[in-house]
Image (cartoon, one colour):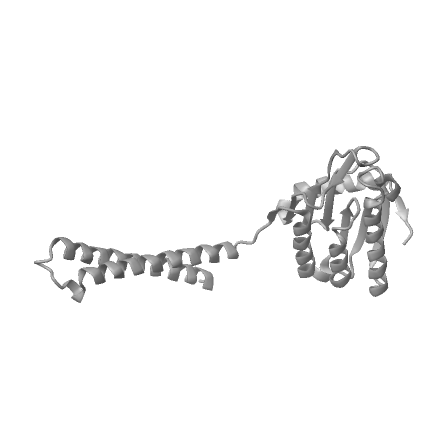
Length: 253
């Protein structure tokens, strides 16, 4: 028998013992309340003492129940997360890359500006030195049609600048970048065959932009999944990545 079943056995039976104590103290309080002349000091407890004791044991039992629930939730390995923003999703991805380390072989990133994914590039450079990194970014000149002039192109240039600094700090960093002009749809990250994170870009009307359109994605919800839960989304991200890559141009870093 392993330690985990022993712990479960202890918690289950200890809570039963507490519940039994609750039942006993409530019964004593009821006897004192309705039959005071027959049992004035049952178990050397007064009515108020029995009532207080039962309430105390009920609180203890509830606290133990909450602790047991939290312990069981922590023991279950999660494989699927829904994040309110892509920034939070990428923080989760960074943690997983850090844990997997040198075992990571390939990281594919399909991004628009890539600005939100800079943290992943930094983590990969530090902890995944053997990984082949492929990054797809939107063409800066094509990005001018969204939002104010130079808004997205500056973000793209910032990503490329951060990447150059990383290459100087980590000369062995194996990364290639392509630029594409296919209409943006999903923001996806695929790591080998076990991790995926996916979100969507939203295009909506904006009178101030050259084409009357605005694009946002970093504050949109995202999904992260690993292992078996990642398989359906991995196929989607990889298929989209390869389709965009075919029409993309290699960037000289």
